[in-house]
Every structure is written in C-alpha cells, then in structure tokens.
Image 1 (spheres, rainbow, N blue to C red):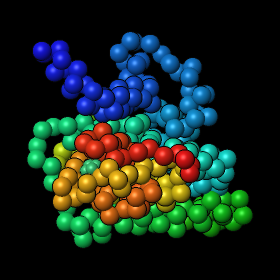
Image 2: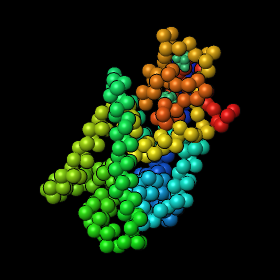
Image 3: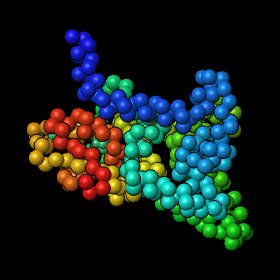
Image 4: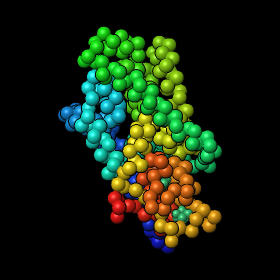
Length: 313
Ligand code: SF4
Ligand code: SF4
C-alpha cells in the first residue's frame, strides 16, 4: 500500500522530480568548485573550456569578471569587444529552448526554488503592482546599455573619452553587471562577505554593503514570493523575455479539455511566475516572455490540457 502510494505520488510529481534532479546536477557542474571541495581535486585544467563556454562560469574565472553569460557579454562590451558570435548563440539558444534555462538550469533559479520549498503560505502581489514591478528589470537593462555601449564604441576610437568615462563609472565600468546580478552577489560578493565581512564593513564601502543587504532581502522574500528575483530584477530575464516571445518552443492550452477558471484554475494558482495563463491565447502562451517552462502548470493540470509545442506542430 505504501509502495503504491509512493508510486502514485512520484507519477504525479514526475516532471518536478526530473527538474529538481537536473537543477541539482547543473548547479554542481556550473559551480564546479563544489566538486573540487567535496572530492579534494583540482579541475583547473577545465578553465579553457569555461572561457569558451562562459555559461559555465565560476568566480574563479578571471576572464569574465562575472558569473554568467550576460555578465561576460557586458564585460566584453565595456572593454571594447562586441562578442557577436556569443550574442547570436545566446539568441538562438532562447529561440530554440525558450526560457527553459531559467526553469531548469539557472543556479539562481535553483536557489530561489530551494527558498520557496520552505513550507509557508505563498503570497502574490496585486496584479497592478506585479505588472509595474515586471518593468524594473527592463529599466535595469536599459541603464546598463546606455552606460556600457559608449564605453565599447569608444574603447578603440576615442581613448581619452573612454578612460575618463570608465574612471567616472568606477566599479560599475569595471564590472558593468556586477551590482545588478544576483549570481555575481551569491558567487562573488557573498563569498567575500562571509570570509572577510569585518574588512568590508570597516572599509565603509556602502555600495557593496547596500547590495549585500538588498540581495539578502530578495533571497528571504523568495520564501514567500517564488522567483521574485527572476520576475522583477534579473537582467538575463529582461533580455530573454523579449526573445522568448518568438521562441519555437511554447506551451499551449487545449480549449476542449480546459474547463476554465471558475471550475478549476489550478494552473494559475501553481505558476511561480504569476502568469494569467487563462487570459493568454489558446494557441500558445509565454506570459509576455515570463514563462520559464518549468512545466508545473502542465504537471498539475487535472485535465491534461497544457501541451508542449515546438514550431507549428
Ligand atoms: S489547470 Fe488545466 S483545466 Fe484547469 S484551468 Fe488550467 S489549463 Fe484549464
Ligand atoms: S506558465 Fe507554466 S511553465 Fe510557465 S512558468 Fe508558469 S507554471 Fe511554469
């Protein structure tokens, strides 16, 4: 009987179970320093691969000064190099996989999911507040572009302007995305804070202290507001949301099977991104690019009404 119950439970949570396994494995692989620590080995030999695939980044990588692909792209642009091939790969990746990276791989998403797994009553901001807050990440990315593009354009054409502007931007010019990236915070600042917090407090670097407290607050809030950083603040989310709307990979809702909000509405209740699935078109929905293809709605739909589509199939 117990075995039967367990089998039914696993069947009902098959997608979540597979997703959790993928999240844990990719979390360890991306932050392979963990493997080094656990098994007392040195994987420095893999760092050339990491430089080619900055998506597999760690704070130890001196090339990107960041902890992810977008950090690498912005860092390169700020130094006068436009990584067009990488930008093209980045866009193609989202076109083919939508935002499944956010739902299945991103270590910051995994950390937020772990926070949200703490059993508490989840909260949802009012729709109007939620819609306004969604724009914060676009404001962040626009600020980044406005400051970083002139740096990239003048690096090789107007050294005087470049050097002066970069000096004025200070730490922001050196690590453009640093202050806006939670992965930067967790995998770089957080480690520095933990190991050397007294020096940082004594140095009076209030910018770094503010960032530390802000992201700490975001992490705590993600216990009640799932994926709060992804929804409102992540620069990667801002860019990928724009591309994801055109992705070949999508979800659609079968209008014959779906019984609607008044009789069910489970999909909307379980969506960690607060997407109004039932107000989206039947043919496909991305929630304006917010859907991260976690497939929780598909898993929980009692009528099997949510379908994965690729292209026009
Ligand atoms: S959970 Fe399924 S049946 Fe229920 S409202 Fe959502 S799509 Fe329709
Ligand atoms: S719409 Fe479905 S797949 Fe997309 S984020 Fe919400 S629950 Fe996940």
